[in-house]
Length: 575
Image 1 (tube, one colour):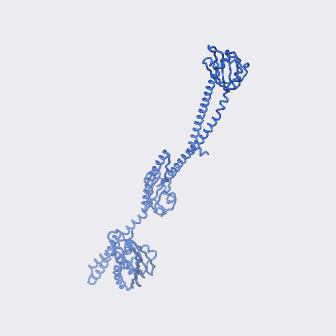
Image 2 (image 1 turned 90 degrees about the horizontal axis):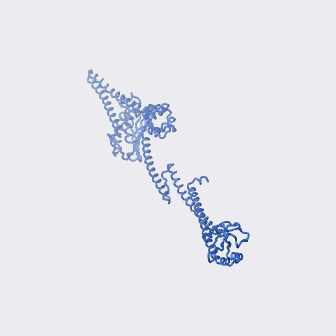
Image 3 (image 1 turned 120 degrees about the horizontal axis):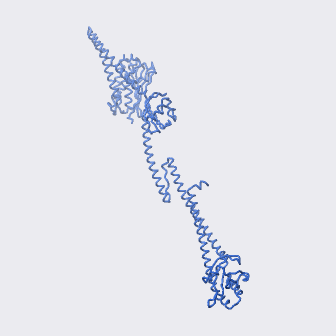
């Protein structure tokens, strides 16, 4: 009930009902008053006419000196009015409803005094003689010479007059009540309609306030509400476009931040994580707070400083490594961005560069030192045979030096991915060429060489030179480190890829060293590798060639039993 009274529709209804009741009550009062006044005026006119009609008759009676009492009573009964005849001085000579001898002096009655002054007197008052309210009309009675003979007074009882109006007033009241009920029903219907329209507007605006900007306010038949609905719908459409644009920008930003390798986190002033990219989620726990996820005491100091200095950078040690953290206040006093850059990865890369330079220097220095030594020894040689031996040994080291430089240049060009193009090629032509080379090498070492083909040959997209280098490097390694037994090459053409497998019965690779064989200059047994003329770059070159062709490489080996290297290359270029 209280909620209903508080609603706008109920207030409109109550205001309308109150206004209607007041207006109808005032109207009813005015109408009844006017009807009563009109009826009394009509009664006065009728009473005056009766007085004027009776005047000649009572003038004659008074002139002749007759007793008027009998005539007054008879005419009073016939006319339905009270007739009183008053003699000069105020004594009542006759009265149709009362004994004149008991009546008091009437000369000072208002209607009598008015009649003596204006020839007619009218009044409404309470009769002390009859004990009821009456309407009086008095006229003077004069003879032919204008001498006053008395005053004739006629009167109506007002109670019957008013009682005659009661049915009319009752009918008017019932009609007013019916009109009130009809008007209140229409007011209730109208107020409920307005209330329902306003509720629809309120429900729609509440949904908009909660974030549902796709909803629209229904347009009502009321002009003001229709204008309001159109304004709200236009505002919602504008906000929806704005939020969609912001959401698109946010998604672009999240996609950008998710794609970078560094760890990115956005937090609010309380440290609650608002956004974290995939790199961060992969390393740290799913927690609501930044310090709960990272668990680094030094991060708390960095977090407190960013709100004061706007931009802070410190090195932070975490359970998952050491990071250079850059904190930036994005929204003043509200949001901050934290960028975690892996310092260990940078140090590892720097170390790899340092090691690479050291390895290259070492690998170049060794053959150059040997060649220099043989040149010095060559000057001291006594015989032609000694000179030829020294020259032959120098040539071997010069070839090793040339091979090293060639491998370094090839590796550098593969990393830059700019010197080689991919074209359709026939892999069988390359395989035949490599098989001839491998057959002669295995014959020199008295090893067995097998070639196995499966499937229907299909064209391949790639570089003929690099694919030849790939097979040569893998087979060369297999032949070098196989003292006895044999080497096998298998080619398996499948639906969308070709699988190349090189398997040997050589010395194998220890499990703890298998993960490093594709690193530059890494040798499982350095002394054996140098004796065989290896540069330590063969498998590293193979890995880069496989990556160039968007393929995959897998190594399986058991120490003392042999090694299997499997290369899978797509027949069509990916992406």
